[in-house]
Amino acid sequence: MNNHKIEHIVPYRLYLIVLSGLILLTLISVGVTYIELANLTVFTAIFLACIKSVLVLVFFMHLKFDNKLLQILVTAVFVLIALVLFITFLDYNFR
Amino acid sequence: MSDHTTSSFREVKGKYKGIFAWIFSTDHKRIGLLYLYSIVSFFLIGVLLGIVMKLELMAPGKTVIDPATYNAIFTLHGVIMIFLVVVPGLPAIFGNFLLPIMIGAKDVAFPKLNLLSWWIYVFGAIIALSSLFMGGGPPDTGWTFYAPYAFKTNTNMLPAVLGAFILGFSSILTGINFIVTIHRMRAPGMTWFKMPLFPWTLYGTGWIQILATPIVGITLLMIVGERVLNIGFFDPALGGDPILYQHLFWIYSHPAVYIMILPAMGAISEIIPTFANKSIFGYKAIVISTLAIAFVGYFVWGHHMFTSGMSGTALYTFSLLTFIVAIPSAIKVFNWVGTLHKASIQLETPFFWAASFLFVFMIGGLSGLALGALATNVHLHDTAFVVAHFHFIVFGGVGFAFMGAIHYWFPKIWGRMYNSKLATSGWIIFFIGFCTLYLPMFFLGVTGMPRRYYDYVERFHGPNIVSTIGSWVLLLGLIIIIYNLVNAAYNGKKATKNPWGGRTLEWTVDSPPSLENFEEIPVVERGPYDYRKNRES
Image (cartoon, rainbow over all chains, first blue to last red; front, side, top):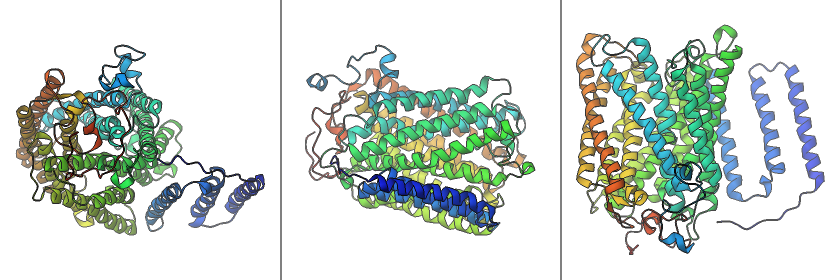
């Protein structure tokens, strides 16, 4: 149906900034394991991993430049997975 | 192109001959039929296993098989019926055959991937069934492979689990194919809200297949890791949590119920307006409820685990969400009934299947509410009531919709008509057999008979006899139906393009369709169920 193509050129600088962000977040993920966070340990790890996934999806996989429908669908998937994790932890945190 | 207008997809000579013309074909219609033949074969094996189980339960104590064989048989029955029959069932057969035609396309978006998914399906099935013929014997855990028993039993767990893992890839590939096909290949003019409801349900199903199946894949691999490497994900002795297995398993397996039932609802949504000769009542409500079921269906998995030892907070949440997911299902039922209101109904076999679907699906759905409520669940959990409930949903819902679908689209697929009287007789006998088989199990469950038990106390004898007799009646109905359809495929009267007066695009092409379905891609200018503008197809 939608065969129109949208041209976009992404500057290398942006990719390098995102790459630096990913490396920084990875270092934080490792560093944070040295801090005792009790129940929040898993949450922190998943939260940081989610930010990294979003960066990859938005910039490296060009979701930022794709059509609105695809953006909504991917967001819905993230919301869905987040809710699944949230509900699972309603068991673990209150058991 | 011009050659294709006269010869059907079966008659077109391709690169390969004989059976190779089928198993190497990338034509969506041939792949749909490959799935049909494979799935029906596995279904018949599953039916025979079910009949043996009912025979064993006809009387207390040993009747025909020993307890270990009974455990293996109910596991195999479940694995075959769930992973090989009902999950791929309607999407792989009717989705493959009809989705491109219903949206005005020549094929699916990725035809080679489509063929690959069938090959993966066959490969996974062979691996899973190989567990039957190896040293330790077939697995005896039930189709749920619950931890910790699943990594302690000496039976052949690994092939069964790996088979189910491989089958998941087939499901994911089909889901991707359908989603991309629907997004990219709808005919000009076919906006989202001009798309028929069967493709809509395949769309919802596709998302569940993509998002939920990897979770069970990983879970099954964790079982392999647990058995082979003693990692300790689920084994309490190693610091693991058996309830985590149940969470992971049902995070997939509950949405899987919607993989099964959504396309079934889609088929019913096609059959009812055609035989009511009336536009479907509440088209948008059905579409929205389809998407709502696909979304909310993700969050109700815990109702399978109410007695597992979850936290109280989780119990209340899952119970509430379970009641919420009943709403969109009920909306659909009201819409189907609303469509029939004041309609001029053609009483043909597909309609009988659809009408009886409503009946059994309602019983299945309402009994599900009894299981979704915490207090009654504690009483009914793991009893024959649960078996009756899910057979009313899965066999009654999906099975009846499948039967309705095959009788509805038979003229399109084979280009021939079946004997209507024999088909209706088959339906009546099957329906009576179905009710006789499963209704007593509600009673047995309420009075305390556990599921998956080989033996029982004397007071459960009467209903069990009735149930076993029901299984024979159902089998008789099934034999009549299969005989009638196979006979019609060879000897039936030639079908016209549109024998039922349907309005969706598949009824505008030849029966059976040509290789590329349409001579020219149609331009869609009306809604899918616009019966006011009946035009000669």
